[in-house]
Amino acid sequence: MEIDIYHLIEQYRDWFYIITFIWTFLEGETFVIFAGAAASQGLLHMYWLIAAAWLGSFAGDQLYFWIGRQYGHRLLKRFPKLQGGVNVALDMLHKYHVGFILSFRFIYGVRNFSSLAMGMSMISWPRFAGLNFVAAGLWSNAFCWAGYLLGVAFEAVLGDIAKDFGLIMLGIFAVVGIVLFLVHRRGKARFEAKIAAQQAKQVLPPASE
View 1 (cartoon, helix red, strand yellow):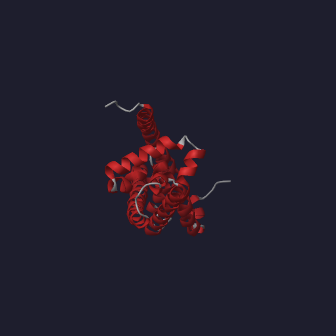
View 2 (view 1 turned 120 degrees about the vertical axis):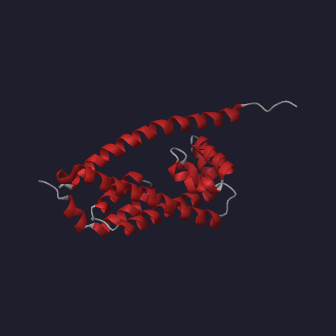
View 3 (view 1 turned 90 degrees about the vertical axis):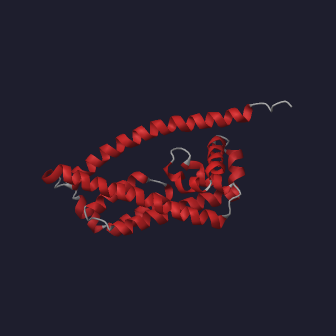
C-alpha cells in the first residue's frame, strides 16, 4: 500500500507542530530540516513551524539548566563520566560567555552538556533565560530555513520528476546524512581532544614555587 505523504501531513499537520515542539525539546535538528522541506512544499506553515521549534528548544534547555542548578553536583557524583563534558562547556562559557550561550546549540558534543553545565555556573536564571530565548530563535530559524531552501533546491533540480514528495525527501535525506556524518566525525574528534585536555589538567601536579 503506497503512503501519500502529502495527504498524511495535510491531514495531521497540527500534530506535526506538536511533534516538532516535543522533538526539539529533547533535541533534533534533523527532524526540523525535514519539516522545513515540507514547509517549502506548502505542507506546513513555515512560521508556525519555526515557533514550535523555537519554543521546544527553549523549554528543553531551560529544564536542563534547572536540573543543573538543583541537582548538577549530585549527578556528577553519580555519573562521573559527565564531568569531562561539563568541564569543557564551563571552560567555553568562561572564555566566550554571551557568544557561547548564543551558539552552543551549533557545537557538536558540547551542546549535550551546555545547559546542565550553565545551571551549575554563576550565571543568573533571568540572564540565561533571556539569552537562551534568543539562541533558540537563531537555532530554529537556521535549521527550519535550511530545510526550506533544501526543499526548494531539490524541487528545482528534480523538476517534473519530483511529483512525489518522497523523492525530494530522499534527496534531502542523502545530503543531510552525508553532512551530519562528516560533522559528527570531525566534531567527535575535536570534542574527545578537549575532554582529554581537561582530564590532563586535572591530573597535572601543581607547579612548585
